Amino acid sequence: MIASTRFSAALSALFTCILLATGCSTAPESHTDRADLHDDTTTALRRVQRADPSLRDFLDRAYGYAVFPSVGKGGVVVGGAYGRGEVFEQGRGIGYADLTQGSVGAQLGGQTYTEIVVLENADALNKFRSGNFEFAASASAIALKAGAAATARYDKGVAVFVLPRGGLMFEASIGGQKFNFQPADSSGNPTGRDTSTGRTHTDTEVRTETSTTRPS
Image (cartoon, rainbow, N blue to C red):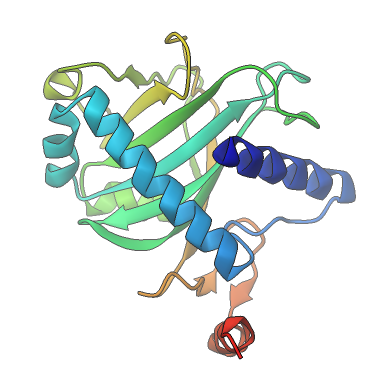
């Protein structure tokens, strides 16, 4: 219930940004929201590996991967989807990513699933981080079940796995998904350039935010 509420709020915020014709930050804005996303990501990784234990080895052999705990397909506008997640390089968290697909509706409805984008090598990860990463219309995802990752193959350095967050497996269309990336430091604070907004998050902003979140 808590995760669903978090995702509904994120989708609503994205729609607000579209209405205002302004950019939304790829990384969660507050320390609390970033901690919540990290918890959701950790839970999602455990869940997908329970569904398919062979996925652990696939991820261990990959150069990097992005984990989107909750990707929702909006029920208001057909084909719309949004998700926010964390990005890892050789097992180490390096930043945040968000994905959009089609037109996003004002409320959550329809399908919700976890998506893992696995990047085979450094070149694939660098392309993902560029801010110009997009799946072709014909792109497909691998539905996670026992043994699925053991026979999975990369397509141009990328493999995508999906697992529904409840109910029966459905066909998750990932064609046209677009990704933005925001780097982060070892503490999870956003740094560098957000490819979604073009804005650069400075060290001063990180120190200011950290100081305001410390207990008195």
